[in-house]
Image (cartoon, rainbow, N blue to C red; front, top):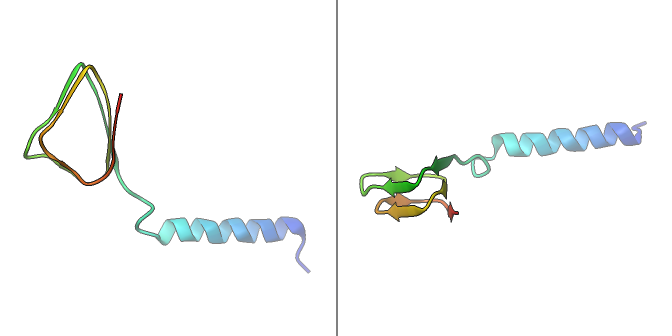
Length: 69
């Protein structure tokens, strides 16, 4: 007979397997921090881009999300 703790551990194990084998969950992120950030037209960023700076110029392609501060 399963106890509450064993059921909880089995549930966590199945959730871990879902995240491990799901290719949509694991995406790369790139972080840039400088006064002037420039992403040129030859850059293609597959994941998300997080920037922190005074001036951000994007000429390239970002396939994920852009978060800038």
